[in-house]
Length: 352
Image 1 (tube, rainbow, N blue to C red):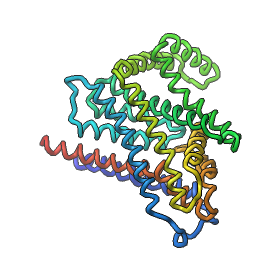
Image 2: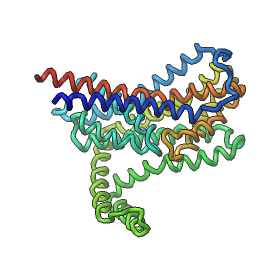
Image 3: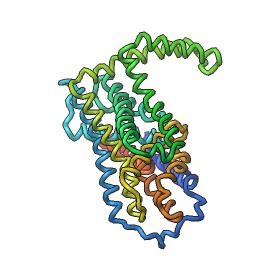
Image 4: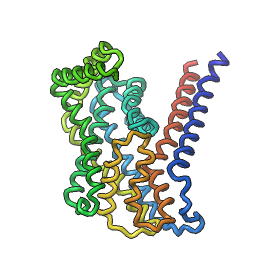
């Protein structure tokens, strides 16, 4: 028993250390070799202007967590009632751990599967709701981005100023629209969607992309049915669809506002809406880049946003922005795991 009791803490410690290595390696890869970066001691930073950036980030996170709080509360049955603090804790962890896995897996494919796993293990909700909430949260987030980005693109003149960026941005929006369209198809046309996916699976099996066709077909049929049932549960809840879309749009808009305050803090001179729209365009343009957290591509394309600064300050401004959009989740994820392990250990002691 003694050996077993050491295994989990050692495993978690190794996990935390791995995250530290990932952060260091990513930072060196993204920002290393910036010989033109100004010496930190020489940087004239208006640090008080970073306070609005921190506040905006906190409000964005609040909007994102509140979206899941509403979905959990509205999905609970009488037998599943949680206290409000419990609901907030579950929602917070779903958001932060989902973001963590999005940022450490290629093309952000790890977030929703882990959120579903976490919800099924820890939320106490029925399996259908535990599945539908992360899926609908992701779909609502992408719809929210589409609403904010398309609105900003249509009312700004950025298309004429940077046609190459905008071309990539509109292509990126097609990728953002893929899952909402697919989930809508699964929810309202499950039979036709299943047939299409089965056809696609057969084609992929012929070119040996899919190894076991029969297993893949069975999995598609069961998952389409589950998705259809679970998403319809959310859609049937009065007003919940629009509430989640509004909160998602607020989250996306607030996150896109952060670079403006970072630029001001480092002495940049740029209009809010121009910076806001450019940030949305760049975010959309790098969406389909299959690297963890869009590492590499994000820094390269976000140069467009931070080019308003002098060359020496760009490094520090981009590093600050990456903290809000990437590193904070890599740091918080392992801390939540440690907290969960402590809680589990504490509960086990209480039982004994």
